[in-house]
Amino acid sequence: SRRTLLKGSALIGAYGLGLAAANRFAEAGVAAAPLEIEAKTTTAILDGRNTTKNVFTYSLPGESSPMPPVLRLKRNAPFAARLINRLDDATTIHWHGLRIPNAMDGVPFLTQPYVYKGDHFDYAFTPPDAGTFWYHPHCSTLEQMGHGMTGLLIVEDPKDPVFDAELTLNLRDWRLGSDGQFIELFKPRDTARAGTFGTVRGANWQVEPRMQAPTGGLVRLRLAATDVTRIYNLKLDGAEAMVLALDGQPLAKPKPLDMAVVAPGQRLDLAIRMPDSEGQEASLVDLRPSTPKVVARFQAAGASLKRTLSDTPALQPNPFEEPDLGSAEHIPLVLSSTAENAARDSICGTLGYSFWAINKVVWPGDTPDPMAPLAELKQGRSYVFDLVNTTPHAHPIHLHGMNFKVVASSKGPVDPLISDTYLVLPDEKVQLALVAHNPGDWVLHCHIIEHQKTGMTSYIRVV
Ligand code: C2O
Ligand code: CU
Image 1 (cartoon, rainbow, N blue to C red):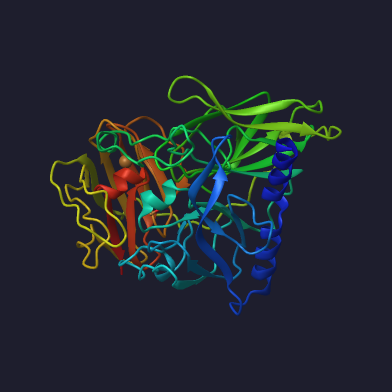
Image 2 (tube, rainbow, N blue to C red):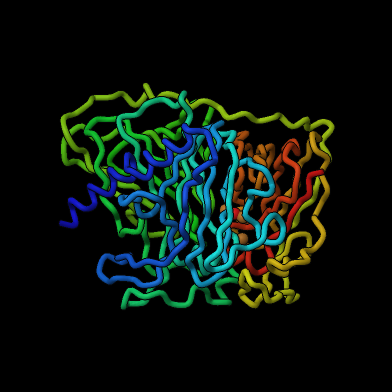
């Protein structure tokens, strides 16, 4: 039945074979047999009724590869994967939030050649940070991510505290017609505003999935917003939870979840204290834009473990080099709209419009002769990005390859969070500081993919 299926898939998400295979590989610590990740099309029931064709996914080895895929790596252990492209279009993989060598970053032309249909590309790196990350293509990004090609990427650390269970949520919507088939992925007039929203709200390729977890248990939920457009305002009904980490980076001290804003590209790790009676449910609710919407449900199963939420253990911090704010050089980054059309045709897709710019420069798309970098940073030096949003829309700005620390905002006091993706609110001025430790060309862009693909992309060079 659908119910047992759901139960099964939730458990596979947490403990499945994909995981075991990935772990075995990471433990071996050799690149002799890279994990094969196939980019391919498949079908899935996304709206709860119809079989949707042309769903794009990463398929991992093992018959019970979870859908959507969840990849598990080990911190400081070598990882190698071969991307095999069985799509009709070129693709690449970007490992969102991982601080890895530039050549492994997955940005066509800037860091690697795109991977044609039938071709493959070998990725190999050692993740330096533990936490909840994700991976997705960086070529024809709206088309491929819009059709589903995204996966959670979990980096485990032997020092990770043990929870009674672990659940994963890949939050994304779908643009489907009433027959359950994909419709046009964007409308230009929406692209020039907040972006084009899906018609079917989803989580883990289902509508309001119900996942089971131990009654009265402390459960770790790892969640990523992989939607191309939607910004979530999440709260939990029917249970209490602590925030463990934001964007893969642990909070020094877990704090009670009130409402969490999670924008495209961002992640949230929660410790949920499951209800005390079997069968009771807690639900994750999105409060945005106005009518609260249940995203997923967690149902208590088994006899109560009677855990105490205040016992929630803190996660180990990841290494982060403190920027020296006194000596830091400031780099202005102005987000604006534009009327200048610079869209250039490219093998990695163009939407054919330019609506957005960074420092008045419009990213023309992924081309063999990219524009000059925004700034050249010296390895080992501290920098502050002075980011100004002159538009009436919020933009989740993502930097590849390095983490930054949020140091100040015109919107009021900030938590000194470490992150790779910051949601810049309309009219906000924010300062993001970092030590330029990772050499190479690193893109930064809005993670509302229509904005990314219509100009709001640029890159910095660390030499
Ligand atoms: Cu998750 Cu360049 O992106
Ligand atoms: Cu944007």
